[in-house]
Image (cartoon, rainbow, N blue to C red; front, top):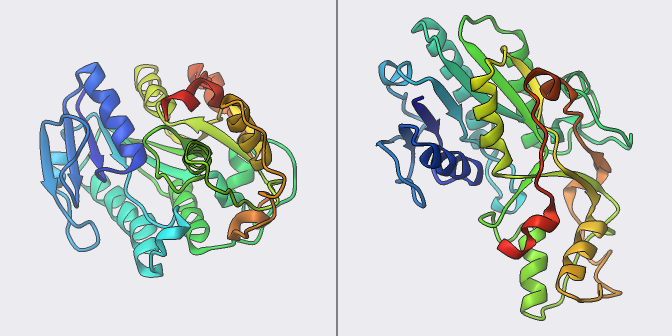
Length: 296
C-alpha cells in the first residue's frame, strides 16, 4: 500500500508516517521542510500556497493524506489568508484535480470537533450535528474547517474520500505549550501553573490511534463519507490537570485555576459520537491518558 502525505513534520502527519514505517508501506512526502523522525521513500519540497503537487505522481498512491493546515494552535498567530488557503482553498483544488485525473484510490482530509462552535450542550455530537452546526464560530480556524467539511459533503467524485472529524489529539511529541505537556513540564520543573476556570470539557484521542484507524478503514473498504473519530477520554481541563498531578503524586495548587483566559472557553463541551465509524469498521480508541503520561 503506497501512502502519500501532504504536509511534513506536523504532529499528526509524523504519527501517520511513523506508522507507515512500522508496516513497511512505501511513503511519499510533500511539504515545506524535509521530514524528520521517520523514514520515507521520496520527498517533494513544495509550498502548497503557491505550487501544485505532481498529480501524475499523486494518483499512483493508494492513500493520499492531506495533513497540512493552519490555525489550530492559536499561539502561532497565523494570518487569516494562510488559514483559509491551507484549510479550504488548497484541499478543494486537490479534490478537483484528483477528480479530473481519474484518481481511483482514497483521499483523507480532516475536520474538527471545534466546528461545533460555541455550544453548552453536554452530549456526544454526531457527524450531522457537527456538519450542520450554526453555533457561533469563535475564530477563523473554526470557520475554515466548516467550509471544507461542507464542500466535502456536497461535491461529487468517483474516488474514495474519507473526511474525519477529530477531537483533541495528544501524545508525547506534541507542542510543549499545549495543555498536557505544559502541565507535566511545570510539575517537573516546580514552576507555577496558570489555567482558565477549567470547566470546559474536551474529548481526547492519543495520536497513534489515528493511523491505526486509517489502516482499518482501508483494509475494510470503508465507504466515502464523513466520520467522527471518538476519543477514549472525555474530561474537563480541571480533571486533566488533576489526573496528571496524581500521576506524579502531587496535589493540585489551589490558585492555578481562573488565573488566565483563552478564546475557546465559550465552547464548554466538545465531544464526538463515534458510533458510525465503529459500526462500519469496528474502530474504538483503546489508549487512555493515564497510559501515556509516563511517555512525555
